[in-house]
Image (cartoon, rainbow, N blue to C red; front, side, top):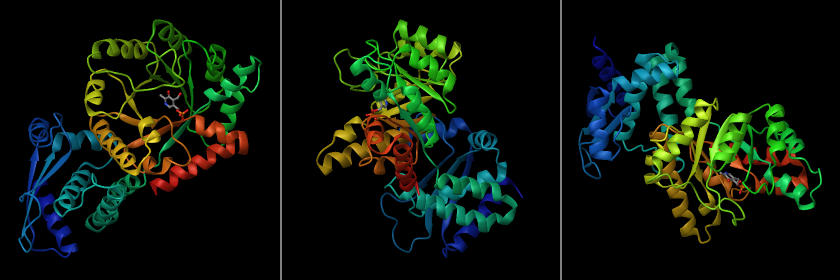
Amino acid sequence: MTRKQFLEEKLKEALKLLGLPDKIFELHLLDDRAITRLNHQYLGRPYPTNVIAFSFWEGKRPPGTPYLGEIFISVETARREAREYSLPRKAYLLALAVHGLLHLLGYDHERGLQAPYRMARKEAELLEKLLGKRHKAIVNFVKRREYMPAKLAVNVDHVATVREARKVHYPDPIHAAVLAELGGAHGIVVHLRGDRRHIQERDVRLLREIVKTKLILEMAPTEEMIAFALSVKPDQVTLVPERRMEITTEGGMAVKGRVKKVRTVVERLKEGGIPKVSIFINPDPAQLKSAAKTGADVVELHTGHYAEAGASEELESELARLEEAARVARDLGFEVHAGHGLSYENIGPVAAIPEIEEFSIGHAIIARAIMVGMSEAVREMLTLIEKARG
Ligand code: PXP
């Protein structure tokens, strides 16, 4: 039996399990070039993907018709991903085929906040029945995707803001970082600004020694900061634009039209031994596509406009922008983070976006820590993030 016949047989079995034994589909196994052509032409995404499904019908499927549509799988991408996730290749191909089939049946992980969870649950259920115990790994993989946990990186700048208000040696952001880690933080963030209004160089150097999780340095792409970052070597640098008079970072980096400049900075940081470089960016597909040419590993989506949105319509539209940007960024191969202005009140809907792997939160956590203590403030935020994912 060929690989294609195996997949077709299993998909027919899946349709039987779904109570739809008469439905008809077509399956095509392609290479990356062929799937890129389809992805570009029909979905406007000029890069390869693992699976695409097209209904035979424009709009709603006529009731009673047995014809569902076509499923296209790139065997090359599937092979690469199976290797990356350490999964059996044939079972992973089947997982992609089942994903495509569910799309044809009207499941769409790209529509609505709960949709990805519903779709992944159905996929896991079908794969369990189709593969039995033989391929527990793939079923667990799909289930894990369903409940992908998100990380929380805590920004301790504002502990230093209080210290600098009196130009004394307390409170110390180093203490805050240790307590944040004890509360469950997955990373510590500091922004060393050109004017040194809060974090000082001494803070970053000491944090480099003390932080057990990972140290993230936010900085403007200036010569002074590049030299400093290369001497400290944080685990990640996040490039942010900086304006002298702003109270806090006001917008994402403009990458469009400046790709070469930004790429040079990213290259210098990475060649200097900094493992990950992130770009703080507005949730704008055009900016993301430019960022994809810079060699950055991560994009942090700017959630400030969402956080500031007043009326519910504005809020919905900002949330939709973040959802779309997260999907585009993920498709472009970025690890997706988000941050700015996130609080205990507004974190829920953003934390439910499955593509976002990490949140960077400062002001709200430090403000709450004044009342309830640092570790407790971090734990409370983590609970809200976990609740939104489940
Ligand atoms: N992400 C970036 C890139 C930032 O510049 C900041 C603010 O320093 C944050 C996240 C955290 O924002 P907030 O303090 O509003 O949580």
